[in-house]
Amino acid sequence: MAHLVTKQLLSKAEGQYMRVTVKLTEKGQSLLEVAIALGIGMIIITALTVVTLEGLRNSQFSENLTQSTGYATEGRDIARTMRDRNSPVYYSASASYSWADFFNTYISCNGAVGRCDFALGVVSGGATPTCTVNGSTQLNASNACLLYIGTSGTPEYLLSKKFTRLVNIIDCSKLVGDSSCPSGKKVTVTVYWNDATGKHNSNLVTILADL
Image (cartoon, rainbow, N blue to C red; front, side, top):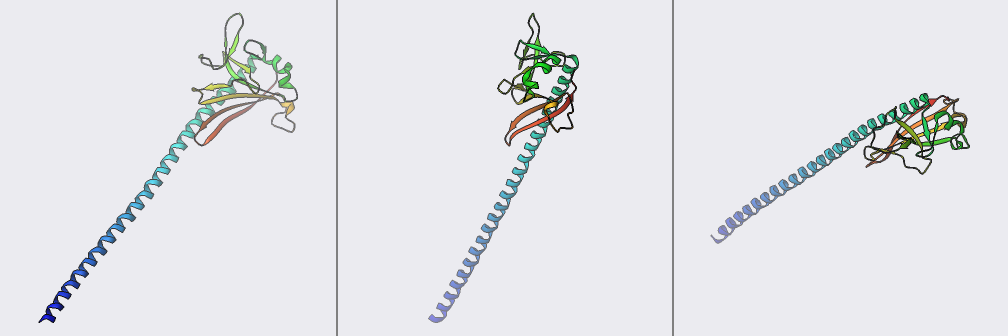
């Protein structure tokens, strides 16, 4: 009788042990499944975040590129109009030459280097007109001037310094082997900007005949 009771107890105990083992195994599987699901979810969320940020960066870059190209086009068109009108080109804020005189006589533009860097500015009225860069007056083809800045002068800033515009003019005679510029002046208008990925620029080139 005692042996039978012991066997029943063992069977009961074994049954409980088996049931406990099964329960623990099922619980462990559930935790593992949750962990895997969370891991997959984190991977998906990370991937979506990366794609979203990349899309925003591309969108911002496209917007900046469109704006910078517009400013470069504006600068190129203004330079062409100034050449057509023989407008004043300023060596300093208040010392100017006509377009033809400046580029025919100023040594830094027709000398060994053959180039000049300019900022676009606005001509102010008065007995002694001056060329003001980064002023409050809206720039247009009628009031624009070119101010020589060389390599250390203050460039033209746009949209609260978001963009920087530079007009570079080089005499075609200095461009040996450049068939695109047989004579006249090669005008390159470059607009720079910075973002999280680095420095970028948009530039437009035109060839203007000498007056």
